[in-house]
Image (cartoon, rainbow, N blue to C red; front, top):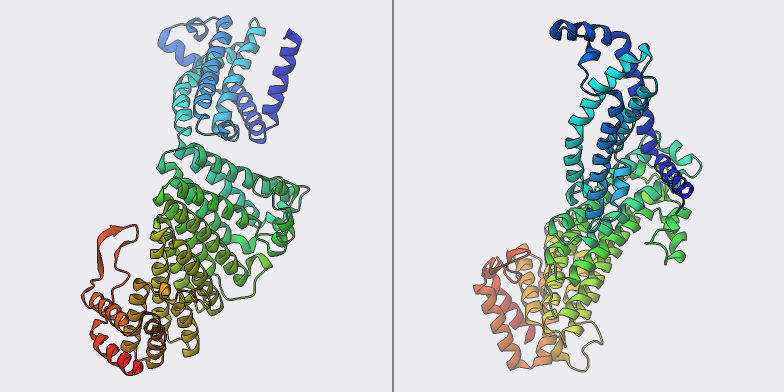
Length: 561
């Protein structure tokens, strides 16, 4: 490479660095401050400083300078080499596990400002060499040697430690998360409409958010330590919730799918959905949900059950944020409560699809067990807020997944427990709406769904006995005992009528034995399971209403006569 080419390449690199907004701002700020400080020192401080030094040492301050001006530039260049060398070394090592780390330092005002300070000090010393024989330049030489140079020497090592600290994964994650929240704050501020209305403003802010989210996703893929991975998952969830809180204040133009959004990796293959995404105003929600779903699938595949459960928890907490929205007309479609709840139901189902496939592949229901806890919690939140239509949809989807789990359990026996978990979560919701005094017809409609969890019409016509899962029956009978306690005879009769199908499938004798086993387990069951699980030690089959078992058996016998 010729000297001219090297100069050209160096100039191009410098221009690229200067083209970065934070770098330009830091350069201008440092240059202005150095010039102002130099003039202030020369005009007001130098005379007093000279007299003070002479009174102490008996000599002029210029005679006490340990370095000749020719050596100043060399010292400054050494400081620059030390700072830049540390920066490049740390970035080159840390980038192996944290991609695109250089982007963070380019946007870090403190780091860029310190490098520019060293460059400004070197340039200032160069000027003192060029005009060393000028008496008027003596204050500038003393300022450089007695003020700027000591400041550079004192700060270079703290800067090294600062670079090392900022390269830690937790610091990187926190910094990227802060960048995202800063952008969300800007576009939701009173000036947000003006910022988004500028030429290319929508694409600029969308690109800023998406690039930061993509970097978090890249870090999640590279890092193997659980702490930073959990922090990234929490960042996805907190970003979504903070966005939902201020979304009503954001100008609707932000929800347009700009060219920058179309070029994002999450949307390159979904061009046919852009019209729907724009109409619904769910662009950022889609982006975050795709990243969270990818993280959930990744954690499930690697058997990191705790991190997979954390993904489900963030989904549940974000859906709860929507339920807190006031029941008032939406400012735009993207803040419509009904639309957002349907959106979260869709993503809960998407997570369920991942969990079902993972359970079938690994013959392990643990991820599904954890996810169902949060799906059930979401259903309970819907019940508490009186969202009947959404709750009915959730029950319908749960029944579908229950049937699919049953079919898959014929070859992966562990999945049968997933059907029992679905029934248990439905039972919890039914008890909640009963205590909340929902209309009887709505309660009965949802109860019908629970009773058909493993009995969807046509599914077991060839082998009726295969539809009977003891754990599901325990949960259904326990619910009947609850209804006896609450004084709901219609619900009790409905459950008893449904159990008659078991007698037809098993025969009187086998049905009697199954019933005897179920009643014994309900009588002797305790609230706590004897092993700890990710959801504590709650016994899914426990009923606190065992005192009504005799009455239930009497009603059942009367009905079967």
